[in-house]
Each structure stands twice: as C-alpha cells, then as structure tokens.
Length: 456
Image (cartoon, rainbow, N blue to C red):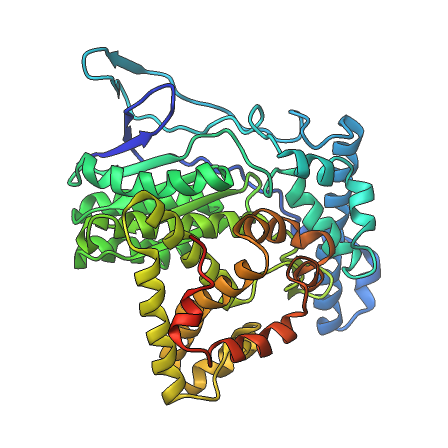
C-alpha cells in the first residue's frame, strides 16, 4: 500500500502526489562522548558520585560552549538573522513526471521533500528588527534569564524557529481517504496561515483506517519529528497513537513542535476528519495550526544550567488552549463552517455547569504545570473544561480589552522580549493576577452581557 504525499503549492495546484517510503530526513546532532570527557586527569581523585556529577557538568559546559561558538560564527557571517547562511536545508524533488491533463505530478520512484529552509527564512518586519542583532537582543533578557538559557533561546532564534517561512506546508494523505478529506484539513490550515503566516517547516499527516499505511505514516512521522536515536521511543509513543487512529477508526488529532532538532520543524496529525462533520474537521485543523504559531514564539524553553523547563515566554494552559480554540472558531465562522457565537454560548453553558459543581476552581488553577497537576488530582475532567471553555471566554475578555490583532500578532510573538508577564501587562493593561480577579467577576454577569463582548 502507498501513501500519497501532497505538497500543496500555489505554483503546483491542485496537488503534488508523491509516493512515500520512510526516508530519514533529520540531520543528526553532534554529541559529546563520555570517552572524550573522562580523559580529564582531574577526575581521577573524585568519588564515583563526584565523578558522575563532574562528567555531567562537563557535558553541560561543553554543550554551552558549542552553542556560544555557533552563535559567534553566525554573528560573524551576518548582523542580520535573515542571512541565508544561517540555516541549511536541502531540497530533493527529482524523478517527477508531469501529466498535463490532470495537473498531478506523480513520482517515478519513492521521493521525499526536504524543502530548502536556507532560501525561505523570512522574518516579518517586526521580527527582523527584533532579531537582527543577537547580542543586543540578549541584553534585553540579561537580568532575567541565565546566560545558558539565553544562549539556548538565541540558538533557536538563529534557526528561524520564531520567524515565518515561505516553505509550503506538506500534506501526507492516506490513500483510503479522498480529496474531500484533504480539502477539509487544508482549508482550516490555510485560513490560519493566511492570517498568522506559515511556521515550520510544517508537515501534516492525515490518517485513514488502513493500518498498513498508518504504520508507514508513523515511521515517516518519527523520522521527521525526532532524532534518529529517538526513533524507537517515538514509534512506541506517538507512533502507537497514529496506528491506533487507523485501528479504531478515530478522529484524534495532535501537534508536535520539534524545536530540539538540529533543523527544527513542526507537525500535525489528524485522523478521519470528516467523521466529525464537514466544517468541524477544518476547525480542528485551524486550532492545531494556532498551536504551531504559539509554539514557534516559545523561545526560552529550557535552562541547561539548572535543567529546568522555563515558563518565561510560555502561555498558561488556559490561554494556550483557549486562544487556539477562540481563533479557530472565529475564523471558521468567517468561512461559514461553524457558528462562532453559538459555540461560544455553548461554552459558557459548560462553564456555568462546572462552576456549580466546583465553585472554587478558576483559570488561576491552570496558571502553571504545578497548579495544573494539583487541579487534575481534584478533578481530572475539570482541566479540560478550564483550558477550553473557560479559556475561550478568558481569551474573549482579553480581546475585548485589546483586539484580535494585538493578542495574536503583538502579545504572543513579543512575549520572549521581556517575558510573558511584562508583555501581558503592556498589552492588556493589568497583571495576570488582576485579570484572574476580573474574569471571575465577568463570569457572574448574565449571558446577554457576556455575549456582547464578542467581536463581530
């Protein structure tokens, strides 16, 4: 069985149909071996525990020094991160045979598209200003983030992670699904990319019910989204999820943000989208593509010094899911797929239902991962309601205080400059804690007053 890979391009519409094997396309990351490190004569007098700790510290230090050297080399090439020398991707697209009557390009052999990131890294005007000088950019965060964290984030920025690209989104469509399924997903992604831009490279896997093809898709996904050494882990985790979509004929969906790769990329997997109804599959595709955009602007993720995950420029769960659903519904309504106002009114009904059962819970309980975990212990299903229905309405209140453009095109992409909390105060006029209190008062209003804040 073969999977049709569909590379949707304005120049090659309607689709390119390319047979898919499972080629490895990730660049390998250079690693420091323990053999190299253990040659340090100073380690000989340490106890076993001290030796292991020293080895670990040297690994971190060597990785940090490597990142600094890379950034220095990049700065010496260009003062502008738009330099084509900073990002290296190759394009393999040979062996194609054009059939002019059908406008379908078919392969004469198994082909994969690894599109050229080198020529397409194109920051917006604002991003060019922000990212044109890594050194001065670091200065804006020097008092908040450790040097190691700043280097880590700068390394990701230098690869174009938080900048839009001209690389067209690639679609992998199972052959037991038709062109109507492709269109259902594609139009949801297109409407978000038209508004926010394309971030990636971005690959979309549309899974059907054929289990053999799901296996091939899972292999391709794990080679695309993970390093070689993590392939088996992926196949035993997300690979299983992909195969289960086909086995159970499900309509599951998830996004993957592979910022850890030497050549970072983004992915989205969705199963049988037409099962949930025409229009709703498009809405889900739009929702997940908003997540692609959000995560592209999450730059400071990890501190190599402390080995801690950072919340410096990440969205709290209620805003991450709430803003994705809000924009997906709003844009879907503009396209005539779903009713924004009806879905928001239904969401408020779910909010009041949960508040009657758990009046003490609020979006504050999803402020960070620790509070989210504690909330799950009290009420597992409550987290879903808080992050979606509560989050949609919290997003609506933020939009009412600013605008859709300010939330999505200012606040989200600029969080990494001075941190999420500072950006929140700048664009919405109050602290997050003050907003939590105001949102609680908003929820006490009657539904007519609440509905009035929704944008037209």
